[in-house]
Length: 285
Image (cartoon, rainbow, N blue to C red):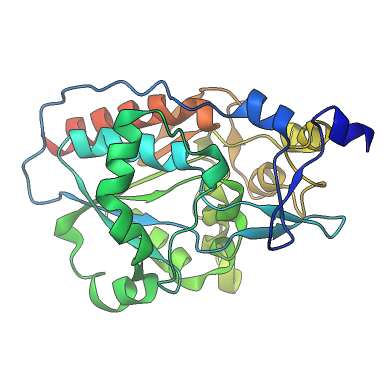
């Protein structure tokens, strides 16, 4: 009761899940973003597509059994996509089974005109994405059409995607064909899919920016999460041989070979700029 009075109690949703408390929302979200509307020299070549793998799952079961209302963080998804769109790239929107993309709507920056315009432009694709299986069945031979694979963040990226064999196959396809892979925050949970069927971790020895477990352990105190995480993402990645370059949930970004990563929602704008410029530099040579 005291936590509720202080605004620290997570909000109970109609489906029995919990979204962040009033205090957590005030601390961690905003109705606008730091998006910079940059005019890039647009890419006009053949490799203009970016495959985006979104989560279709909403509820994460915490250690105490409570469900966290999650999905893809809208800022972590839409800001990088905005920059890449401005640089001349377009997107193939997918989820594992073709069910609609799930966003953490409580984090949507509804007063940000650029973000909302982009969201509304792609809303029908978010609601009707392609199943990733269709891409695996039909598009893995179209290497010359793709520049990158993007896995947005949000705790929901840890649901289903790390266990999806198609995700692992797509990441290995991108790696083998010299495509870029872009992700941030909890999105690198997807990288665990490369270890399925006892395969070696694809990104062993890579430097990457990832949301720190230490911050996830702290956020239940302010009601952002309704309990402690079911498993520790950055620890798993480190145990597999990744080198994490950040210790805070800040705007850190990192490029290592063809892997481009960012630490948190605060890195979304920087990651978008970095990805756009890196892809343009590489593809315009």
